[in-house]
Length: 283
Image (cartoon, rainbow, N blue to C red; front, side, top):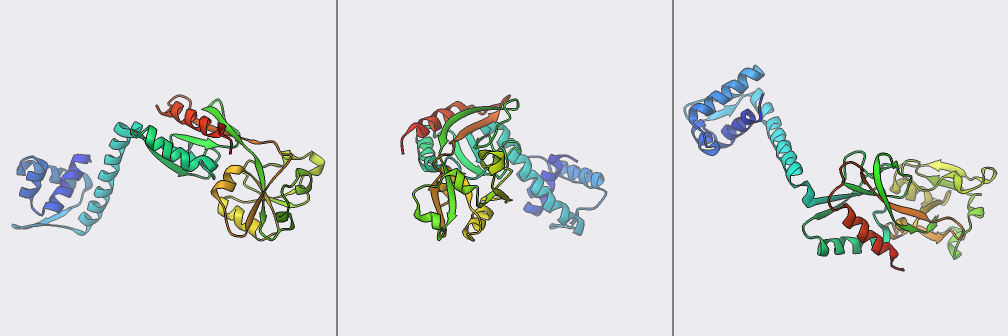
């Protein structure tokens, strides 16, 4: 079975006759007939009922036709991806994109690089979708496999504690790590930046695991637990019932851009340069 056979089947079904399909495909009517017969032999089923005036899909033909349209669309997308991939830049992230710089980054990129369309892609995985092929570069705030990925640190973000809006700590200007150890701490082990290693072994809080930013926020809103997160989350996820306060003595979180070491997107250095410039600006 070949794509040209599927194109022929679709052309006949859309045009309604072999003659019109031949005109659409730019071949002879005899070639259309031969191509359809070869497809039917390959599949072992009749695909069209022919009359002197029209061609109507059989039951099997209707199923094959629907799948053929899908396969042809996928093939066209593959060609576009292969030939025009550098005209598009997919920047992956797990939770917070580039925090408070997200809007300015998008606007400046559009103004400075109109030749490369920017798309932000959220994928809740350790590599922000890079390992899964969902993006060309990714912004991550967790550890990086430097043997597999190229990477650059573009900035740092302060840590904040996320609280229910009616939590007593919400009335404070900041909270120390030493007090947070006495609360239940909700974390995302796959993509989160918070681990028990922030505290000495004998002073670690009870951890509760979640798997997504929305679940994390929902758990915190109940008031039974708190979370610790970089400022990027504060900027991107302002929610009713959630308050953020700085953690005064916690180390900052490095924000890194990662990319495939052996096949970086041509715009990689431009992304790193722009984000480094934005993170260098004082809030």
